Length: 394
Image (cartoon, rainbow, N blue to C red; front, side, top):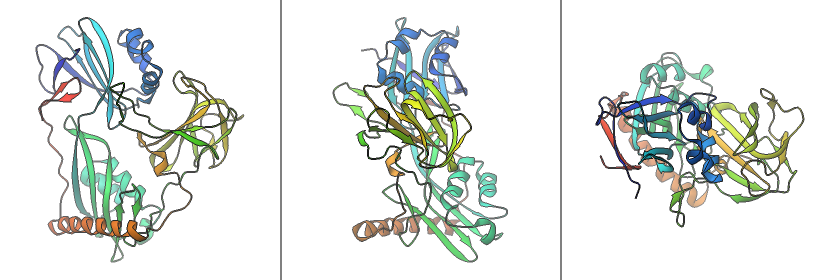
């Protein structure tokens, strides 16, 4: 078995090896990275199956990566996150190079903080926590239901309860808001993250947010979203970071929401592809298109329901379909959790379940309010151990 034990040390070295931390550069493809670092293209890309080749196109600019080199600067291992669950692992063993998809070792912590408004929620959250991400998720989840400029007053109370993942001792991926409260004109306004992955107020009414339309009308879903599926036969992780809509070649593809085209072109894995940037950090991806509608170009603003291209089978594809991806702040999420026509009001057993969840959230919020919880940054651990993806330090 090709298993190699590696100890990643953030401040020291092991047997002369050194870990360099870096961010994936914008505009650099996986192939370009291999060439730049003089890594062999054949075993690390051209020998991969079409599925893994396509996954390499999911690498996001700005992603925190780690590369391990020996004391002579020779490559030993590389870790590149694909999402908040899985990462690419490249390693050298007996002068041969290997590629695999492995789980990300992370720890999720439930955190909270309380603050008094002095300027605005966005400004005050960043000032008190240093986190733009926390400010983004708070404002994004309240912006459609509250008017901060009109009703917010200096001295009003704000509290956030959220889940944060940590990787190598530092915050990793976007935090997930679980519950929040902001006081405005003496009224407390609550928001809760329900088990269906949507947000509701205290009356069990869904908070209106970013709503998507179905990108291909009357199409059959041929493959569902899966962030971390382990194939029982192949014994490999084979995530599917989107939803596939099977349809006849040439079927119109429409923009799922209002936005601006951030990328249009051809890639090896996804073929003809369009990416649209929307509000609140959302981006949609439309892959394997036969062709683009005339007039589509980078920077063009398109409206929800506007035809942008046509179903095809370009790139690494086994038949005509649309691969539809949805990302929020670069994190792949399930499009079917967001694609909807109207907001909803919970009823029956669903409402009873939500009210129990709401009660638990309120108890936690009240404890933090009573203690006036302040934001504390987590200390960085000294090291983390990997045995081809398995953590032996915990």
